[in-house]
Amino acid sequence: MKWTLVVAASTAFGLGCGSSDGSEVNSGPLGHTLFVAHEGSLVSYDIATGEERPGAVQNVTSPVDLQAIEDGLLIVNLTGRNEVLIVDGKTMLEVARMPSSAAGGKRPVHGYISPTHAGKRYWLALNDGESGEIATNTARWIDITPGSETYLKPAGEVALGAGHHKAAFSATIERVVISNISDCDSVLAVYDYSDPANIKRIANMSAEDAGWDGSSFERTCDPMYMMGVPPAPHGCATSKEGGKAYCNLTASGDIVAVDIDATPPTFTIIKTAGAGGGYTKAHPDGRFIYSVQDSPREGSEAKPGSVCQIGQLVVIDGLTDAVVKEVPIHYKGHDCKDALAGTDEETAEPSHMQISADKTTLYITTAGGHGVEAARVRQELVFDIAWPEHPTELASIPTGQSSGHHGDALSGDGKFLFVTNSIDGTVTQIDAATRKLVGTITTRAMPKVLATFGDAEGPSGQTGPIH
Image 1 (tube, helix red, strand yellow):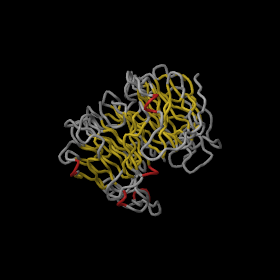
Image 2: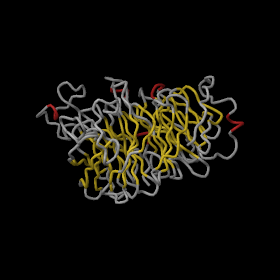
Image 3: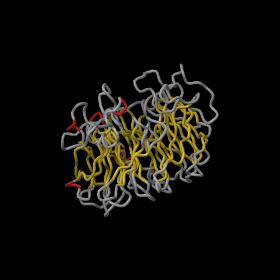
């Protein structure tokens, strides 16, 4: 097991600066490196030794969705500063720090790397907006095409519905579906960004289109949750074989199949037996889609589950739009019989997903404690997906302590899964192939999100591209 000394936080540098010695010390080839955006700073660690590398970037407030790209740059949305930060991973110096919007957008949360279409590639920053201020919800495209004349420059922006937002791209053309969790008029919308200076909304699904007809509380759209509930989409992914994107409506548990390449794009509702959760991910082979839900679960009156159950894993066939399987998710694995009620882990739910490079293991990072200060999660969930349409739950892997959503990353060489432990100030390192704990890397306080890069290994798994 690896341990590092916790290095005291460096003196804060001004905007646009990293550490004073980063460019001198970190000038050679970059070995396999872990980058962690903490609340306050972005820091790097040598994966082989666990030691903190020289250099740190300051003024990192509420970082979300840190990703590495092929030239070793790091991109992260800073929700608390309304900024997109770009850092050179080798020198740990800032390359750019720009507003997440030029049109009044605020609070950038999720960020995506687009597939390369027509020779162009973008960072998509989704601004969740301020509560009750619809005009502060936007999506901004930033050019990350190597060699482009506008490299690392804003390329375009479009208004969105009421956030929180998530997205999935077309596998073949310059289109993206973006979800609006707090909207009734625009639940899902498809955009054509072939001309990023003139992005066009080409299809829209309203709550009424999704079946919210006002016939009951559950089918009355009210983003304030007083007279009803919104559809609340939260998680989309694209099947490269079928060509459709699939988005999870968390309120009803429905999955929406979005024929994103059609003229015009269409929306088809797929029923499931669960609800909530939402994170959605495609199997690397491209046919099957996985989506997590946080019910049925232990203690739920609406959708009761078994002891230790915290939701279910839904498998969708991207060629037929059929639900192939709905598999219970247990907090400590398939044979868990420990009741969660009354413990600080009773709010645990499935959150992010990662798939091993050999395509045989699905890892689910848990979250919990939303609005519950004392709530904790301490497990990484594991499914065998050697048979992709029939996942089998295995024993969970104990991790450090976290509260709420926290980051994970699969290394570029596919060897390791890293999971932040936000309460402990550590990162758990797991051998992705053997499903075994490797060790724990001690970080600065409040690690949030992470990525890896090395000259030999390349960037950690990216969110957005369709391979």
